[in-house]
Each structure stands twice: as structure tokens, then as C-alpha cells.
Amino acid sequence: MRAVYHFLAVWNIIVDIQVLIFINKLFNILSGVTACEDEPTDLVDSCKDYGQIPTLAHDIAKEGSDMTRDIHIAVSKNSYDGMIRTKSLPDTSEVLHRDVGKASDLVQPGGFRRNHVITNTLYKSTTIPHQVHKSLLTSIGPNSMLQSAYRGFVNETLHLGDEYNEELTPLSSSFDISQRVASSRGASVTKTVFTIFKSFIGSGILFLPKGFQNGGMLFSIVGLCISAALSTFCMLRLVECSNYLFRNGKQPNVTYGIVGEQAFGVLGRNAVNFSLVFSQIGFCCSYLIFVEKNIGEVLLHAFKLQSSLSTSSWTLILLQIPLYTPLAWVRRLEYFALTSLLADALIVFGLLYILTYTVNTLENAEHGDLTWQYFNSENWAMFLGVAVYCFEGIGLVLPIYDSMDDQIKHKFPVILSWCVVSILVICILFASTVYAAFGRNTQSVVTLNLPSSSVSTGTIVVQVTYSLALVLSYPLMLYPAVNVLECKLFPNQHVKGFWRWEKNGLRFVLVCLTAFIGYFGKEELDNFVSIIGGFCSVPLAFIYPCIFHSRLVGSGHILNGILVVIGLCTMIFATSQAVSTWK
Image 1 (tube, rainbow, N blue to C red):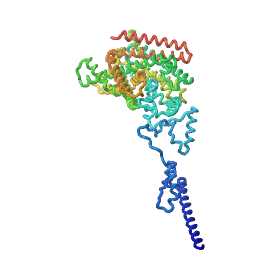
Image 2 (tube, rainbow, N blue to C red):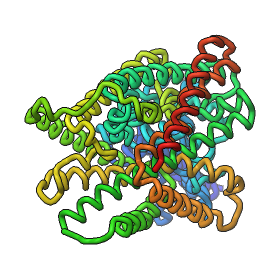
Image 3 (tube, one colour):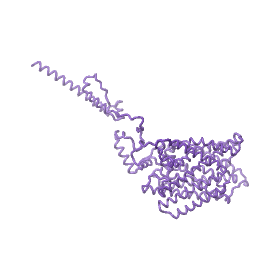
Image 4 (spheres, helix red, strand yellow):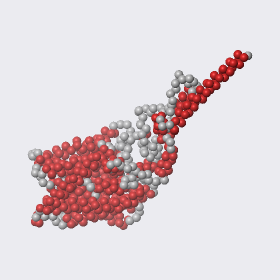
């Protein structure tokens, strides 16, 4: 019995030792977990960064390791990251929308609270501060100026493009998404002013001196002021229609075509798209003619080439087709951010050079050399279409207004009015100075009034840089017309097939069409511009806004009727005069 008693005592001691070893190991594991909060080690830093329990290596050679094996396995399972997503599926690891976020963000410390605050902020329509841009280039980049300006024409496809994937769209209504994007990307006053100037100052100012010759100095100044005032009034009418539709909950993002559709159904939208397509194609034709005349002048004088006028013109126009076609195939506006900024800089440089040369010409001219007149009784009607053509940005007013910050949208009428006044002063100063300097010799393309390319290097630089600016601006002018036609001709673009090549074919055909029209309109460029302004720009600027306003808002019928009558008379008279005087 004594031997059995000693055996049991030794056994109890061994068991107690094993229990103490187990408790010690368990204490070490638990102390390793709390080290994430207390000890300044590398393991602690990783725990704080990733919010995970550290997985300690299980060493089976240590004493008592078999007892703690299950604990190590449980800790290891908690750090398992899950299945790896196959590469054939869309990559959803990145945040698709900043205000939506990733589902994995919820497991982070404070994740539920952050999601709750953001959700309440969105649905209470509280404006989220937009991101501060690091440079001027990013502030006027693709997602701000270009897309906000041209989204009005291509609202159905522009923000999605040909690479649209439904699986990457968050599970929210389009209204919520548009509200979030608008709140996080609201444009400031400075960016709005910059966008308005970019939208309104284009090729129209180049043809304005010839318009002053057709109308006369005094008549042209008065007519341009009236055109600017009426255009501004009609733009504000469109803004009122946009606010009316938004307040009634019919449309969150209102465009010119949507206003027409809400007023007169499909007929109203088709009327807007018809005028839009023809006006944009006309603008592209004028760009092509301008490039042909300037580059032809440089080649003939700088390199002393000898060729017939018709052959050289047709050759230069055909050579522009392979230049514009690849640019027209680009489907995303963000790729034109840098080229658009470069084109603006080149246009400003060209205008300053031309203005400086004309001022020097006026200073050196004698009194008897001035041949300008106050009123041209023969061709004054030709000026009407050009006056409307100069303010070609009415189709971009609603997208610009929609892209503004909600807190400053009430300032838009004042901002727009002052911008139009500034643009009006620039146009009058430039056109009147050029017309006063050259008088009856004012050319339809103002750069042709500069000294010959054979004797002036500055003329070559201006003609080449201005032509390059219009080449870079050509795809932006063609873009709205292309997307309107593609929405009509390719409604099922996401179905498998060769629809992308079909779109490329359509764009190539449009480039060829602009070249074909430009060849026959190059000799009567002033008449051609007057037809575009009278037949296409007048309905967009004067007629449609007033008709839509009377139908939707239901006020100001008398004033709207007067403007509609003025617009119809201007359209008919200016177009008929331009056609009748075509030689």
C-alpha cells in the first residue's frame, strides 16, 4: 500500500506540472495578443495597421506544444483572407465610387460609423467638400471641364463609354449616383468662368472681321450687342426650364435634348438633335477650310510651290482626312485634356499677334487709306448669321450649370452675364480693330491679311499654330454630333458584334463628309458661316429655348413670342440672303 501511495503522489505532481505548463503557454499566447495594444514592436505595428490577431508559429518540438495545437489552428483560421477572385472577373478591389466605398471597409475600426455618417450626409442632401486639386491641370482635367461641358449632348453614353460594365455599377439608383457625383465634383466660380470662356470663344471670332465688313462698323457693333443680349436671355430661359424639371422630380440631370423631350416629346428632342448635328458639322467644316487656306498659304509662299488653285486646295483637304480620322476614333474626352489646353494657348497667342499687327497697321496708316464704313447697305444681312454664330456655346449652358456646386448655382445668371459681356468686349475690340485696319480688303480668314509668308516668319508661326489649334479642337467639335448619331444608329451597342468597327466607319464617313462640304464651301466661306449661323444656330439660340420655356414653365408668353418671331425672321432672312449671294 505504501508503494501505491508513493506512485499516486508522484503522478499528481506530474499532472500538476503539466497543468502549470499548459497555463503558462496559454498565458503567453494571451499576452502576445495584448502586445498589439501595449508593446511598441513590429508585430504590434502590423496589428494596428491591419487589425488582425498575430498568428504565432506552432513549434511542435517544444514541451507541451501538443496541448496548445488547437489554439494555434484557431488563431490561424481567423487570419484567413478567403478565396482569390479569378482574373477573368472584373477587378472590384478598388473603390469604384468614393462615396460608396468597399465592403471590406466596414470591418475596419470605426467602419460602421463612417458608413453611417456618409449615408446620412448623402440622403440629407448635404454637400460633401470636393477634393482640392493639386494643380491647375487637374482642376480643368477630363472629369471637370470637358466631360461636364459635353455631357449635355451625349448623356446616354459619354460617362460610360464603350467600356461600360454593368457589374462595376453600384447597387444604387441613377438619381442617387448623379447626386453624389454632383456633390463631390461641384465646380467653383473660377472653373465655371473658365469653362464658359472655353465654350464660347472658338472659330467664330476669326470670321467676325469679315462680318463687320459685310455689315459695317456701327451696324455690326449694335447687332452684336443685341445678339449677345438675346442669347444670354435665352440661355437663362433654358436654365429656368432645367430648374423646373428638377424641382418636379422629372429629371435629375437636365440637358438641352431632355428639355425638348419633356416639352414636346420625341419631336422636341429630334429638333434639338437635328440643329445640333448640322451646326457641329458646319463648325468642323469651317475648321477644315481655315486649315486648308492657312497651310496652303504657307506651302505656296514659304516653299515656292507652283500648282493650280483647285488642285492644291483639293489635295490639302484630302490630306486632312487621315489626320482627323484617328482623332475622331478616340471615344473618351479625358484624352483631349492636354490637347484642349494646348489649343487654347495657341488660339490666345494667335489672337494677340493679329491684334498687335493690326494696331501697328492703324498707327502707320494715313487718313485717306481708311476704307471702312458705318453701314453696308449691300451685304448687311450676311452679318446676322455671323453674329449668332459667334455665341455658339448655348448647347453647353445646361451641362455647365449642372456641373456647378449646389451652393453657388444661384450665382449662375450673374456669372453668365458678366462672362458674355467680357466675351462681347473681346469680340468687338478684335473685329473692329481688324476691320478698321484693312477695310474693304478684310479677308474671310483673318490670318490672310497678315504679311505674306515669304517675307514674314511671324505670319508662318501664327498660321501654323492657329491651324494646329483648330486641328486639336476638331474632334471636340465633332464629338457631340457623332454621339447623337451613334445613339440613333447603334442603340444596342453592348450586344456582342462588330458595333465598334461600325462606329469607326460612321466617324470616318462624317470626317469625309466635312471634307466634301468644306471643299465646295471654301470659296464662299463668309456665306457658308452665315448659313450655319442662320439655319442651325438661330433655332438653338433663340427659337427652341423660348418655345420650351412657354410649354414647361408657363410664363412670359408675350416676351417668348416676340423672341420666337425675331428668331424666325432672322433665320429665314439670313439664310436666304446667304444662299442668293452665293457665287
